[in-house]
Image (tube, rainbow, N blue to C red; front, side, top):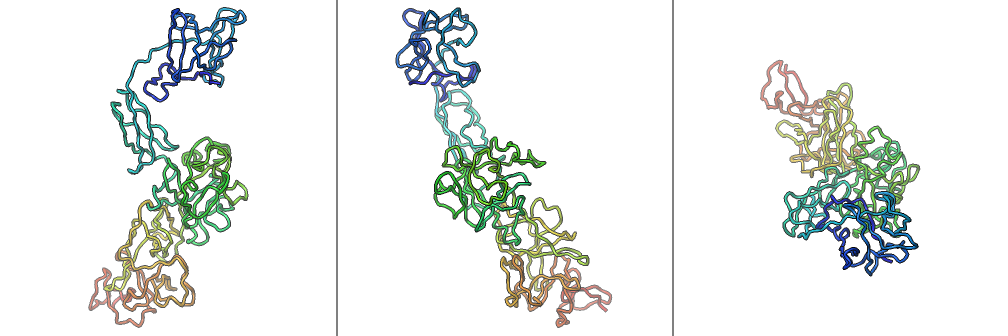
Length: 560
């Protein structure tokens, strides 16, 4: 059975010349020798029939003779009579874009009325020259997709098509004059997350969350028993700073082919071995198993999906994930439901819970502060690159340190960029802030901290192994610096220390922040009464002036 010709909402103002759709809208009209009847043939040599019972309409291999009934600028088409009634070609539907919009015949007792009877007007399609236009889509100069279309000579370049959700592109300027290929850099400024085109690129780490309303949010994490945190609105890190790495994810790929969703551990989300499910395993080398397509769509507005006050802001960043090699259907990634689920699976696109956010991974580090200190401090080292988050509103800064043999102090330099993984730094806040907000989402590659002699550790160091290391501390006299470890406590993970090998035998070192030197407990260095003396500018002096203020062994004193 050959399909019936259909009608749609296109009007004569739509110029289809040279476009792929042209043949679907073009008919060959032949006026028969009687100069009254016509035949209508499609581009694939099938005809509108003249049904034997007056109620057919399916395209036929043989021509049907149709009689024109003039109605001014328009005409009606009839194939004769059946059962003493005139049969007219009708639209077969009662709406402009209804599902029954298929041409068919129907019988009418009297003269035709407006009804469903189709009115026709024929337009000549002039011969035109069309060319093949191909768009190569790129991101940062790398080709990620292509689109080919027919275009009429002399017309403006056609609108780019075949673009994924959240991606836009602008047609080249000028008019079509030949077969051509154009390179177009697509616009991804509204994409819901940052991504890397290749695994070798600098990672754009983030938190991947499902059930995006805050009261039901679930965080994806690297865990041996589950991948989704049980508690809604879970904290964005484990009890230790090292644990933050478990919550870091990156998207590797592009919007056209799909993304590999990788955890800092190296594992990734993949299609299940059978069916349309999903699982979490070591990174698969097979692209068909680990690529996920990103969509916007009607789920974003589903009732209950977003209940936050900033609903519109979240809607702009929300997306759904579907496996790239599975047909539409029951295959959208789901974080285990609103209740106690801690696994991943797949569900319908409109299911509450299959909507995601990719958030900048911010976390908070507490600083040491007391009423007697003029500033607050901490040392830090992490197993991933990090920097101060843009949301941090206090004056806390990160510093590297280099020992100055001339002054016997540790000269501190502010770190303006990204701190490399495992590097040791000092955090200082002159306003005595209680914490600093950091982020692992380093949008620029980390560079080595030139001259930094602070060493970071992301593992605990036993007290017995601290004999060649000075550790950060605050004395009972509220002097701040790096000291030989006392007591028996281990140095916790995620701290920085100063190797004694870079020093001149000192058992304590003050920190010099641009001429502002932190105090050192004088008792610790009492055996160095003959140590060098410096003025407050850091210049070494050979004699003192009574009443003058100087520094010796890192402590200030008044000459007598």
